[in-house]
Length: 350
Ligand SMILES: Nc1ncnc2c1ncn2[C@@H]1O[C@H](COP(=O)(O)OP(=O)(O)O)[C@@H](O)[C@H]1O
Ligand SMILES: [Mg+2]
Image (cartoon, rainbow, N blue to C red):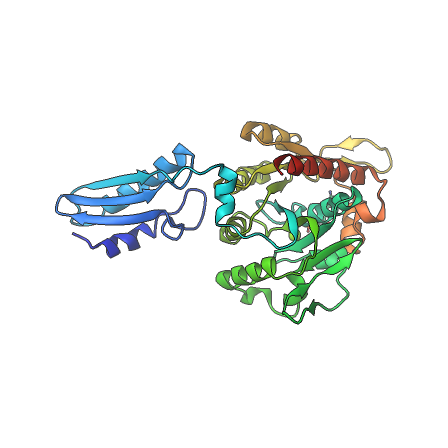
């Protein structure tokens, strides 16, 4: 018969459904009992989703049963103690970011869909609607915010060694790019990155903010999960493009936020269509409407579609984001209406 420790190391090979992280590191395995009659594995119900729970139970049973000398496997799932509200429960082990009233994370399944562009312009749109806004680029591997908003000042640190955000177009921002610029991005390894990100999240002297917009690294893997798990987020926004392949990632994004009890504020379809400059007509470059369809199917809000326009790209490349440069552009209007919906949603949930 294997020892509890041997069983535990086998269980480290069981991945949490939809994630690259295993169930042991997630803290789901509570105890392992080895007796003459067989092995009992005690799990803490990790999710309210019965499908996820039964998938984990099946995999645990299969993994342990496949070990030599195990006559029988029992899996006991303990329901977590009921708490006043799911939000409070989620907030319980999550850290607040000092001075910040709301935190909204912008996520995407992959890079290049315009996540940073949306994060920047959304932040500016919230500012235009009267909110005090901060923006943080948490993407070490491809930090682009510094370029998009123009990072021309050296980063300052307070005597208490807290990072002072830069200010541009009336919003405060910090970017990992300001710190790792001179280093090769490839030397940054997972745990180091996560540590740096946590330092960033909690060590910035934001002052008073109504909202901090977090530009998450692209993807829905461990780095994103760590951030969404440890910081008290008020909502997640998922950016996608209309291609089928990008839409698949929307599901993962929604699942990631749900697993960590962060409400999904909605899905934005970027580069949804192209407006011809000379004839003014609308061209569907990719199939269209998938974002809205999928949002409906997943039961989350569709926040809107943003066209592919040259001014957006130029603004990004020249540190002149569209909403700041040209507030009356129709696309700036689109960003503002998305921002207004998000603000409304955040005020509703408190
Ligand atoms: N709606 C849009 N219209 C035109 N160009 C866009 C649009 N959204 C993003 N881009 C451009 O696409 C590129 C990738 O966008 P970016 O925001 O860096 O993506 P991500 O952060 O998802 O990797 C940038 O050059 C950006 O200016
Ligand atoms: Mg980006």
